[in-house]
Image 1 (cartoon, helix red, strand yellow):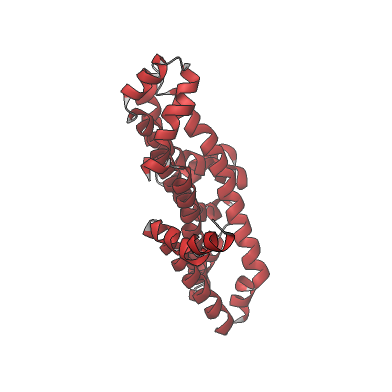
Image 2 (tube, one colour):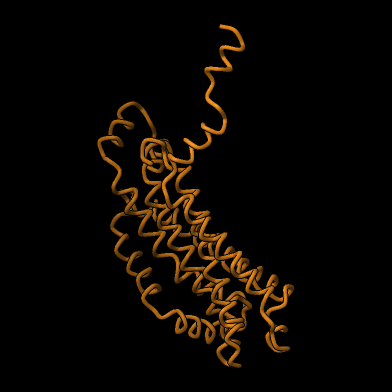
Length: 262
């Protein structure tokens, strides 16, 4: 076959990209569209609005960037620690020798989740003081449960016949876990991770009550000093950040899920 004939048979790159996009779930491409529209709307509103001196002090670009970075840093540190605790713990609690401890661990996680976030942060403040460290600890306690529960549920739903088959062909327990159980449990586990990340972004706003900088600072300033524009800006930025985090989590979930399970 000549090179010209091969070129004619090869589908156009644009058609290939379009067919790939059409195969994506609707939320994978719709959510970034909403983020772009919301972000553009916020930027247009910020550029076109006349602010008072007090509002300008809270909403100038450098303050907004610093506040967003502080919020992301708080959320990211808490998220990394939560992932490092909840996923390994969830895996351990599904092993035969540790299964009996599952109700105790989930019960403790339920206590952290059930406690009001503000009350939990206040209690921690009395125990270890105010600031970034206390805020991170409060967020960890608040966000462990979704990932822990989903890790346990994801591993328990794996067909035991597949586990037995892998052991039957000579796989070790570790190899069965990493090559059979975890890949099949990934969608459920990552769903819990997305839930926990969104919880972290929202709950991090409360850290402003204990002296840690976050986007909650804009919201509380807007309420206490009656600056509605500052309040709106803080709320919109928190919503944008939550949507971005949720979309990134959805992308990871989609591409990490085995093709046959998407």
